[in-house]
Image (tube, rainbow, N blue to C red; front, top):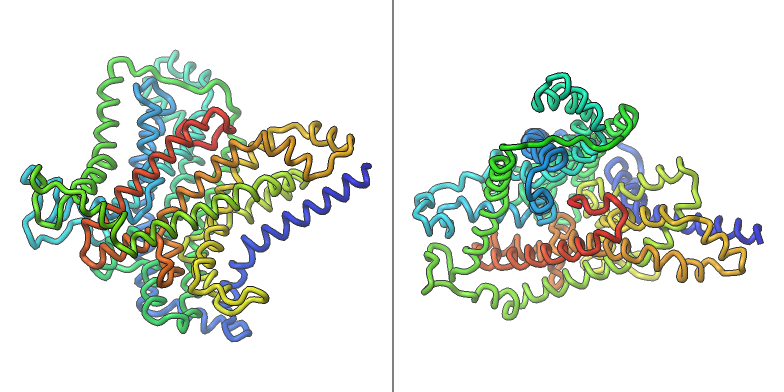
Length: 560
């Protein structure tokens, strides 16, 4: 019997390794081989020349510039929210935390579109109050400053989530000792708490920087119209203009982006490793705001108003007018844009159908596959588990544009038995499976880790085979976590643009691609209607996830 158990363990471990290798390592290895050895032999001189072009150098500088300052501004926004919502008795903390996270859940191109419609000369919302800029005025968000601002707003939730994890570990006894010695709350925060969570500050800023490096939707809508290119938009322009003939060149640029992203991820991991040894967690520290509760709560709501509510209202009002320049009133209010994109227009109908099928298919496959994979991972040693989890997270840590180039290289040529996946919807599905593998695994792995192995071993001794043990013991216990992972995958894939921008083909458009195309074609009211629809879907899914919150392992839902 124990020999049978060892055989099952070996077999499940081999299956885990094969799946991780196919979904995580194969596309990365294909990308690196094309960048360094496009002809079959390593040519570092040619690789360096591809990176040293004037356009490449300028795009690299723009990427580093916007990502760095965007991360710093995100720290300025996210850190106060993390302190206020984690360590004080601020009223409405949970609602504020939920709303603060929405910019991270909403697609970057939707965020960019909302801000463009808020401050543009044709702003319907500002026009209703006679505050819109004069006709012909350039949109102030186009270019470097607008990209930095939206990077900050989109990535402030990353700062909030990461920093809050450190703040909740600050022992209350330490803070109370400082307060009893006469230190003010501000002094305690500056001299005790912030130095203690410095590794989390570094890790959060590094993650925000990495997110900026790989962002495509924001610089595509705010930078490309004024020829301000980052590495992601430069790759998009090259591949869109010249097709597969420039794959070695864009592969080199993709490796550069991947290197920048992995450096940031490495810095984040090193910072958090140091954090684990700085102090032990006790009862979380808490400050009483007293008379400052309502003023600070009002300040938080004002920040949410400007960062989220006003841009979304700008999208809604734009979607409710027949065309740009028409003021919104009861006589001009119309739902024709929603009718057009939801029911009449063939391309948008296909996009909704394609995005639903592809995102839903990826969510279902990953949710079902995550359960046996998480069980198999439990059979490895702790060190091996950390290495394998790092491999699982690799495609998610890499910018989406990099993964898209890797998929083109991987599936352009015909494969045995299945042929070429290029210019088919299957290549998008494969990219989604690789990209969001980590999202599906995280909640399931956490749930499996909380199940005692005694249950599985007792069933094995009783003669139950691995499949029966999984179906009757593990799967029912981790089903809520698998559903949560599926919802996270669906939300992330449903209106994403970064991956599908390079992988879509005629008839296989996704929502992100159609929204971007409509905005470029000057059909901003229809693009706004699509954006509003996707926001509604995301919020509904988030609320559904929140209902699952009590059944999920701690930390899966960051706002709880």
